Image 1: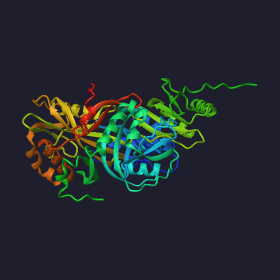
Image 2: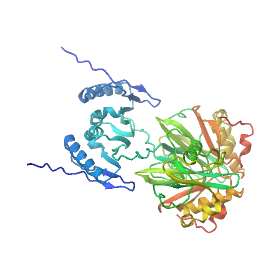
Image 3: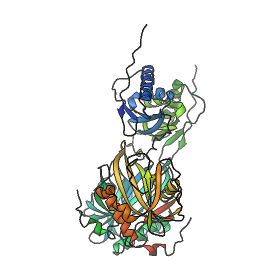
Image 4: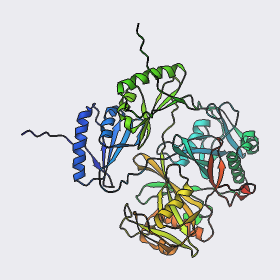
Length: 277
Length: 277
């Protein structure tokens, strides 16, 4: 009698009774061979009582996606260079968590020593060619903190160095990008340099402007959300507004994290706490 | 001479000079035929000056993923039932925006009329079986507002009806779920009902507890982040803390949105503004 021996896929156990297969083989693989390995591996993991099985397939193994789907896998999330598939192989209820749901944007209210605001004219997008002066805005990169993203965007768009002060307000909107939602944080930053160097291709012009002139633009007055945020900036300029500043602390799993809160009202919390880099 | 006629793919123009193909054909399609259609369509779109081409492939067309990748497409994002691929076909710089980067969580600080806090014991996860009393927490669903998610989670876990008051603080952490980041909003809610009905399978027990007893749990004292948030809750309970409350407004594209800000410091903004449902 002949016995066929099938090499199993390499899986790493996760903390939730599941297995993660990081399929980082460089060589192409035949989809029939992959199917056999996958079926044998699932049978083995099921015997071990595993629940969720994750397969991370790099782009160059796109020929194996169909095999995984035929074996009962569904998509979970994707990035430019890989697709993550998942299958629940236990009889217990499926507790696979949802995918990332939000993109995070930042806007920067940057003040110089003359209480002028840093504004830009965008070369494309909704505001391209409109002549509207707006605050620098941009998207938070993967793994980047909100406070750092605001400083980076200002530097990229205007060459100005800044220091993060606080989040003045934020708004949430939905279906802003296919089915995904969007959280936008209006951040106040203090300028550390003053000579504008327009470096980014998406910016036509940048300048310092009084908040009055900024607010007087017809677009700002006609738009409820812009009008609100401008009023918040005026309150801040007048010294009558406190947003959320940040403190470096640790989560229960020991991970470093920024907590954003009203530090004026709760400054005693920080009395025994040194801010860490 | 014979001329082969290839039916092109149906694409809908987006607002950025691109095309979106929602490939919602029910019948299976041969991957060779799909490749031909795709190549012919790309050639056509390129002539039209299109830039980004998006293809949304439902799970049941997984056999076409490899063809799209071989035609130069990369992955953009995925949900359980579809994969979104993208290719930049213009000579201009690729400006395809990034995928959603964050999952959003909420925690609920719910007070009753006796200034007691609503707490639960979780049956699984990190706190399962530890006996720790913690505030109800959960993930925001796709398209759901933060304020609504907090109310829903409390209802699901304890049966208690609540009204959203404000965001007390938030924290950001990274690589919390594969490469994705996490934003967690601590929300204060006012209880509108008081009889606890433990309904969710993930909850072992729920009760009202004094904030002092909650804070005295060893876990809370040993953990810097929990200690901070508890202190913020004490400040709130003492009437000395203002978080961000929300107002319904509209974005520049006319979309309804919640703006969260310090309403105590900027209440004059709302003087002429009626809160809308």
